[in-house]
Figure (cartoon, rainbow, N blue to C red):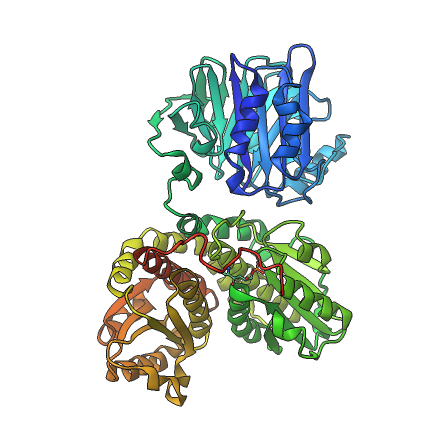
Length: 612
Ligand code: AGP
């Protein structure tokens, strides 16, 4: 996620800005920049792709830039490749306004076209630059920067945390936020804005958290906050009691837990720009109806959790498209002499976009004539660059080795792609299309309901963490979801685990069930609940301890047999795994916590496997 820092005070700003950005490096970024206002030189902007050290070297640690007012940014690319031009700060056309932004401007193309018609020229491909140019337009119109900010914010849609400086205002910076966090820091030698506490905790623990729609005017000695109508607001101060390392995790004990809790927001950021007036719009993916109708086979290729997303999508896509969908492990696909030709669509899923097995499988598919569409989290990554089309999950950087929010955003984006393709094929009714779109839009709130109630899962993990083998059983989508639950548990708690299609138990695995064996029974897929229940009865009859996950509708029935039940909200059947997986992630997390495991960096594992 991008990192923002701003300072205005009685010290040189550049070194303070660089230090603040360095303290936010953990957030993940691909480029960095600062802008400092000088009485003699106006706005001095330095920015570069790559590591923060490159920026610091460029300005000799900040010594080169004179001025006590400035803004800084580390960019996690969402719109526009990581490069020098797309890095922030962005500057308005006449050079008078510099801006840094965290978030996604959903209507940036529409605004950009309007500004282009006014003769504005753009330097970058980013959505953020549109805000800088729009600010200049309104500033010319009204002559007041605060008023210009108000007018600008009333026109933009999407999420933003903004830091703005203007060469006409030597003593003040302006900040605004909606959906992307931004704090205000009250220091002795000046005042701050920042994406999170980490960046300013060295200077002050006296902070205020901006609320959505608020605008702040920050000077060396004062911070005034206004609402969207520019009416003044009271500022509520908080004293930060975190230590610095806790601050990096936003106060959470581990990145994995933080990222589980970020899922509602990550899913919202991934889907909301892709649903307009009830229709799924997929950025600039060039899949025409003729092409889609001519597809003879679809492959989904990935590794690990991304492969598990493919397993869920297989069930959903075959139901929606009525076309064969084959899911392969990338490491198997590339050596299996796959049946791929120019009428094959190959979907490649990867959080990092650098997994070598997946990259090699994609190249093999392309070599055989397939069309490739990548679903990737890291903008500008190798797989993203080499695929014919790419759709990004906007989960933000995922630090924990065990994926959670990237998995969830991949899952929901695959649902949207499946719906989009089914619509092109005419294999989904208008009613079901609308129901799925409505279901996707409801997911963030429903996921929030699950992440708001972690204590149930925390309690069950405290009861079951001492098992040395745990089974996950379920049917259809529950089975596919169980694969991910089982991997999460194995990865971070080192407990052996297997996910099984519960109808398959009687064909072998049930011999392993003995008194006390822990079975996590997944009963969220309504259409096969009764079948799933019969399998729960089977394992109970052999002495298993059963922790079940189901929806409210089936709580009572499940409670009659299972020893413990976790309930998740009910969603459209296709979307149900997005909710059922959250307690499985939490279960793995809390079990690992009880076992004293290194949760964010589990043994033997890397975040991106760039070797065979
Ligand atoms: C998931 O928790 C693991 N870290 C791992 O299975 C991962 O999903 C796999 O290595 C694929 O990574 P990718 O999505 O970056 O390609």
